Length: 454
Image (tube, rainbow, N blue to C red; front, side):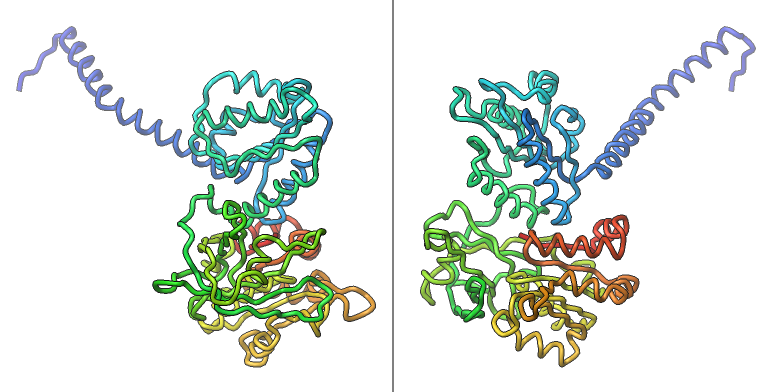
């Protein structure tokens, strides 16, 4: 080994050593920086809401509809960020997976005042949005030459950036209620299947209508039918309680209707609970009319299964369950009860409401059998019209507040299935009163507060 005291050589050697170390260290530093940036991005994404609801409003109509949209999603248990379009940044859009835009057009195709900044800042350039799934509700007036001009421009720009439509743009002429109703119909489907970012799904299969039974003869409400279906060919596919089916009606196959599955594979077929919808002119709903009246037993039905991860039992399979519902919502709860009984899980509490016990106690014999056998030890019923003072499921909740709290302390999960208007909102309000909003939100974040409402 050669040693030297030449300071010039020593300095040169040190410089070379530092340079080499820098060359070796640089990739590590860059990798660490990338990891930190990735971690920061993931943290930001994890803290961001699942859905953006953005509005551009000139007179307030779009803002009002956006508020109703956000409230509907929140009632379905979906976290939402509601904001003016002008408040959205490029980072907001790039981090979001789902976004709903409700926008008006001002004058001859112009953006409303509170959207002009967004249009100038973002829509004049490019922004990669391959992860974004979106829908647009465009409000306008056909008396103007550029009907829904800004809504169309926004829709086109989002698609050009690589974003995918959840469904085709809906255009509203002067706040036409029938068209706005289409938006909320789509919204109810999205809220029920929010784990699926788009409408891609397996092809429809041929199923046979095996059985149909009217469950509520004499009811003051619309006719409701128990329907059983089985595949025409092949083995029965697998599904879990909480999942859905989509049925394509022959007169409108492009717009499939979704129904909660009221059975489990162990039953040998798909069971549905279908309320027959009658339009003001007396005609039947396309899907409900086909399933309840027009299709003969033995006919083929176009059907496909759809996972509904937000309403499956999954991590709650071993927990006590509080099941709350009304009307045809008993379908999704029946599926869960069947799954629990088969698995020997007996900590079950059903709170169910309808009009009259004599006509509207759907699956009465089955439910009373589970109650008597101990598979359903807690059963509370609310038949609203069987007494002078109307009683609903939320009233049963309030009357059992201490017991609800005890079950939750013991780790119970709450599942709600039924109507979004009235029941779901009333139940949410009652739970908020007894638990507090932060505690209820914490249950939802933990997956212990799940809703399938429509």
